[in-house]
Structures are given as C-alpha cells and as structure tokens.
Length: 263
Ligand code: ADP
Image (cartoon, rainbow, N blue to C red):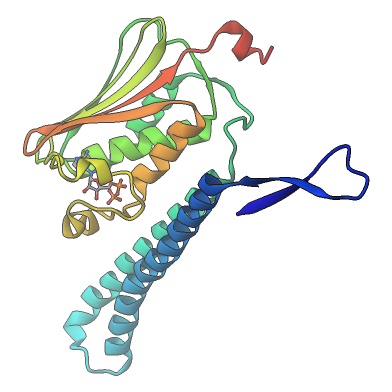
C-alpha cells in the first residue's frame, strides 16, 4: 500500500513523497492466510472426536446397543473426550506461545534437572521402551523459561516413546561446547520419510495420521517445540532414517555474561 508523507518544512500540508510497502502487505496477506487455514484446521480437528462421542452416546441413549457392548462404547467416549481435552489444551498453549515475546522473563534453568523430570514423568508411559539420560561435560544452566523448556523436552521424549518399536530405546543426551548447549533425543523407532521432514513442525501435520491417532497425538507437539525453541533463540534439527530411528537436537546458543545479566 502507499503511504503519503508530508514534508517537514511544508506549511501548506502539501505532500512531497510516497513510499510503497510491498513486502509489508505480502507478509500481512500470508499471515492472514495462515490464520484462516489454522481456524479451518482447528474446526475440523475438534469436530472429529466430538462427532464420534455424539455417535457412541446416541447408540447407548437409543437403547440399540447390546448390553455387553456398553463398557466398550463408554471407553470409546472416554478416549475421544481425552483426545479432545488434549487438543484444546495444545491449541491454547500454542496461542499463548504466539503471544509471548522473545524477551519474556527468563531465569537460569538447569536442563539436566528438567530432563530428569521429563524422563521420570514419562517412565510409566514408556513401558515398551527404555529411556536413558546422559550428560557430557558440565552442562551449565541456560537462561530460559523453565515451564516451556520442560514442555519442549517432554514433547520430544513423548514422541520418541510413541513412535518407537517394541523394546526400543530412547536416549536423551545433554552436551555443550563453547558456543552452545545441546539436548538430543534419539530413538530407535519408525523414522520420518525425507519427504515429510520439512513439514513435521507444521500445525496438525502428521506423517501417519492413523498411527498418530493411536498414540494420542494431536499434530501440535512439534509446533510447540519449534515455537519454544524460537522463544529461546534456539534451533531444532532432525536426523532420521525410515525404519531405523530419529534424533531431534535442540541447540541453545550460549550467551555472554553481559547478555545474561541484561547489561
Ligand atoms: P503428534 O501429536 O501427532 O505426535 P507432533 O507435532 O508431535 O504430532 O509430530 C508430528 C508428526 O511427526 C507425528 O504425527 C509423526 O508422524 C512425526 N514424528 C514426530 N516425532 C517422531 C519420531 N520421534 N519418530 C517418528 N515420527 C515422528
């Protein structure tokens, strides 16, 4: 769009220049398009479990269900309701992260402690895989937001467990060098096809929707991780081979003392 600029020395309020903002407008349009797509996806994703819940409840309510089938139908209602709850909390979380700025209040966070907590909290769920944690070097605390960092590591380990094979393993490795602190989550699972890898962080993207549904996935976990990484000036990359496994690596840049103290 055009912006007309009045000259500083003009007494008649005359206009002496115009600036054309093409890039600005294109950004706005694509942000608008993304928002529209997101709203359409959210509606679709929320409708699917709700339609199932309604269907099962109607079968029970109409009295057409066999008495023996009622426990199974009830379980399905519970399962779909849980899915709906998880979806809603992930959508809310993403919109909170969208609102957060990179200069949000930070504190020193011990990534080793956070990772220990994640491994502990997921131990029960990871019945079929073993989850280990190793630390290389000192792994000094980083400047960040503890809750978001917990969520990011939790989502990566949760996926590593969910997309693993039977008796597979998950290794969380924390390491550092002079410039960065790394958290790598490696699994021995199904892997991610090369063609899917660039799309993996998109909201609601699932490489294998039926598998993701079976594991209780919402397609939002990695979007949350990516967003959290951005808020920490960190990067995330993956190395994966189909049928062999996947490693996700978060890299947190080390800050200088001046940056740490906000000087
Ligand atoms: P979901 O809730 O479906 O797991 P995510 O955003 O966490 O959603 O992940 C998006 C998709 O990426 C998943 O549906 C799955 O296809 C794939 N994916 C994520 N992590 C892994 C992994 N460790 N191994 C294999 N596939 C994975």
